[in-house]
Amino acid sequence: MNHLIQQVPLHYYVLLSTMLFCIGVLGVLFRRNAIVIFMCIELMLNAVNLLLVAFSVYHGDAAGQIFVFFIMAVAAAEVAVGLAILMMIYRNTKSVDINFLDKLKW
Amino acid sequence: MVQYTFYFLSFLAILSALMVVVSKNPVHSVLYLIITFFAIAGHYVLMNAQFLAAVHIIVYAGAIMVLFLYVIMMLNLNADVEPHKSKWLKFAATITGGLLMIVLIGALRNVSENAAAGLPGNDIGLVKNLGRVLFNDYALPFEVSSILFLSAMVGAVMLGKKEIK
Image (cartoon, rainbow over all chains, first blue to last red; front, side, top):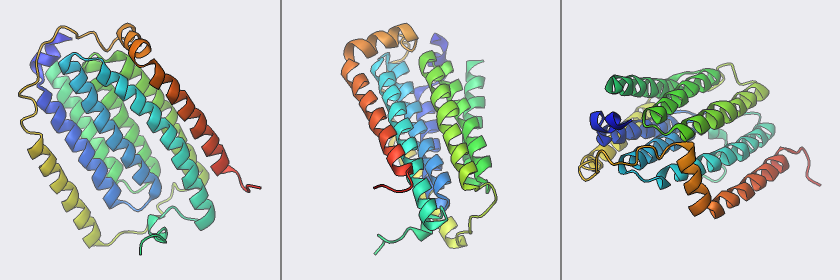
């Protein structure tokens, strides 16, 4: 698909990934539900993945797409462990509100 | 045509990502996140990264989102139980996110100038090509990631047990 590179500049992908990443950061700051915060972390990971693929395609280097593959593998493992931790938190505190988890705050 | 597809997919991704953040019900957040993931997969198809598009849909929309929905269902969180943050905290969060976006956009403004356009290797995203690179140059990290998966599985099982003797 050669005409994509001619019609859509790389700069647009940088802008799109930046916006998605910042929406993820906004969600982490904005919400109190731990599961939604977790989803926003996934959103940030995906923004970075999209930018890596864009750079890989525009520079003709396959290594970027391999990195994205490994990031997906790590993200899947992270979600499995993180949701298990979340289940334990819910079992102990009967809530997934992060404001109850401030024992390490001071 | 490609340009309009790009605009449509970007609009869809950003809009549904915003809806993930602002929707009150966690189940709606998950559903909007699935729309975002499909839009990102559409971007991968647009960039001719077909292998990654397939893997993205399988891993994210197929595995991770099912896991999220399952946990929400098990914890019975589909009602709006989240107490509201104060107005000031929401305001501060929005300002912080907007400022971060401005800083990042300003810092990355000139990044595309030295990017070479129209390179020959545009079929690098196909399965044949990526498989060759993956198993020639990155065979050891590929095997290490299987150990990572094993340890993640053992860790999740250990965390999920009721009592550890």
